[in-house]
Image 1 (cartoon, rainbow, N blue to C red):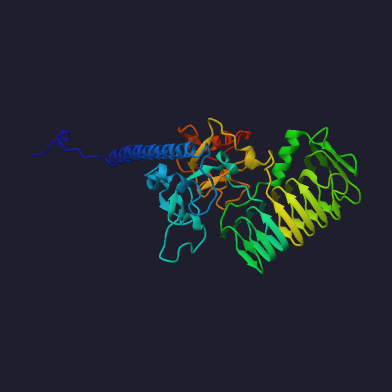
Image 2: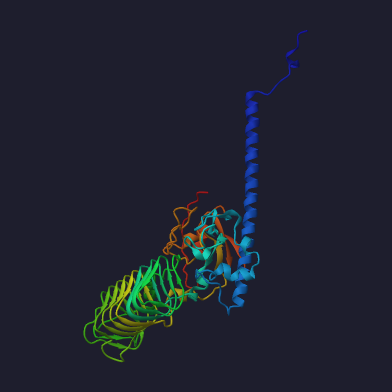
Length: 449
């Protein structure tokens, strides 16, 4: 019997099958994306909880430390992680973001934790010995306790000490420290490179090589801050520097005093060029120069100098005479000293950024998603070229890049000094009140996620 057309069994056509398959794929994609977002939201929530716990531990630490927050002085047992561990019994897990819990054995990334895993070799066999056995996905805003460690001498370049000299305070170099002679250091030596002392060098404190982040503040930035904030008066006489009318004076060009020079009062002298002082300084007056020197170029002392005040040199600094200095020394280049000198630590100048950032504000960041243990962001810091790596070279010219990483879909989590924690878009990092002196600015962060 022959069937009518209406009695044939109809199957799916190819077009209908394709429509069904595409619909299933679209629905599956939507479902997977929703599940992915839900998982990421859960990880963000866990991360925020971790940061909240770390902030509460830091606040508890400050209550028991006369208001001082944890420090960023990276020596074994002396930085924020071990300092707050007694106030956070779960710090091993609370210090790890779920999106960056895998180890890097060094500097972290957006998806790796920083730290150094204990290995089978000798302890501290590689760099970052202070991080032995520690892992974390978070870093501290060092403005909350910037004055915890201010050495007597801090240099970007190599430090070389020799002759018959006495230093009363710590000496820190980002590059390396060397010494040879009858040198006495009543303090510690800390270096981003090697420490090599020969001869009769004596150091009362510890000697810690290969520590990152021992760099001094930028002398150029400090110079500009003083110039913009205090309106220094130009020095008009080659024989007199008079601070009686304005404690901030500026010399545009080199400062090379020869013969008689008198200093009236005390203050801060800015020099846009180099400073070359030979002979006796000051040559007239009380016998002691009461001034801070902030110099964009090199500084050289080659005579008998008696100075109560600090020296900040953007270039190299050399001391080759019989000098007595009471104050801090900061140099963007090398520090070289020989001859007979006594250098004693004095009060830190009020315009030093390590002091300026010390005033806490209520909405100040405390802990953040980070590739490193800490950071001191500046408004002029650039947006990292690679948001997965951030500022991977740990440049002190780009410390915002340690926090500006694509960890949570174009955002990072931040906790604050009041204990709260929030998710912040990357571009908004430049609008946070990192310190009382921080000036926000607008940036554009490429959206590549």
